[in-house]
Length: 490
Figure 1: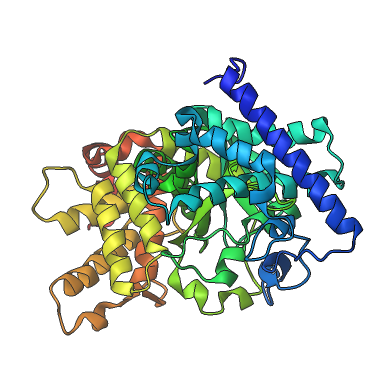
Figure 2 (figure 1 turned 180 degrees about the horizontal axis):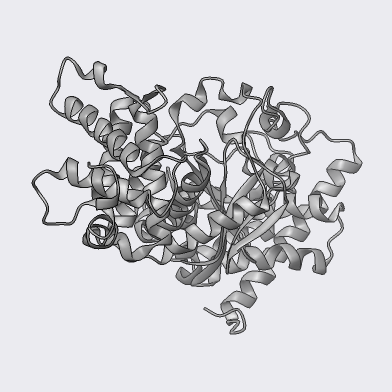
């Protein structure tokens, strides 16, 4: 429903809402002038600094939150009993008798369950009262007055009204980037995609956004100054309550997840940094589902998309990597290429790279890295002598992208070593630990998991920049057969 096509039912709804706000403000004004006590928000978010890394830390204050004016209307003995307010009762009656609005507030199944059950009928009344009380609370915090002014009410009401009446809503998606520092406030990656510093108001608003069936560590969740921002997404608004669980919509989550994972893969390819995310946040554009005092309206969920060992006091790390504009430019180029790439092998490898950075177990890291290298360096029909072919091709790619000044032969040997270790893991060998470290030409002993991730990053980067070699046969014909005879026999 377009905002310009205002219907009579919307006009009447707005009139009744404004009457409820006006009457509620009048009653609150009397209580405040008489010195009546209204409680405060007892779980109000505050921000301090994590020791070591210096990133934000969230905590809750029991007593220093702002006044929660909703409390005047709630409890067993409210200061302002909503049942005694004619405007509140009129609003409830109007919503209950107009299904076009009723089913925007409540799912049909819930309404049907409550109908005929006197014990639960008060649930709808209470939820509608809460809607009016939340508007009143927001009004006082924004307007700093109990006098009713329509221009203040308009600014608050219009956002609520859109969440009720519009069938399609616009949002910006924020993904806080954990345990990295940035030398800039904002930088654009692509149209409608950027990295942006989260200001104090935004940080406070996100502090308590969690999904309690996906527990995340509080100190990890808070440890971000900047977010990946995906702007101008559309969501369907079937009913207002469903907006509080946007991520149950598989389609929007799947599309978001692809954008987010491509970004973190690009970041890891370029930097090798350990990072991740613990929240996905929805910032409404011109609408609001809920208000909390003067905080920015946000919806969202928490998610475990970071290494589990972050929870083991990783915030004490004083040497976090800092990303500057030059590094972000490189990340942006890789991100755009990944995002627009239709080669399934690239996406398989990028996904496995992301998993490598999230795993706790070294064996899993090696297996993920090997699957990624398989996807990139073996053609679909190759089944025999795969390790030798793959190592040869990795060595050949070193000719066009120097990896720590290693020769193609050095690369070949090290990749062979990685796959020897992988084979021991897959076959449950008791001697697997003997293959865990690989000796470089400089006699340095390097853990195979570390080396496997390094080569997956390197191969992804060279193939993204040289897409013709995504066909492994091209590596053979142009890089191996074309000049391999000039190199040491491998």
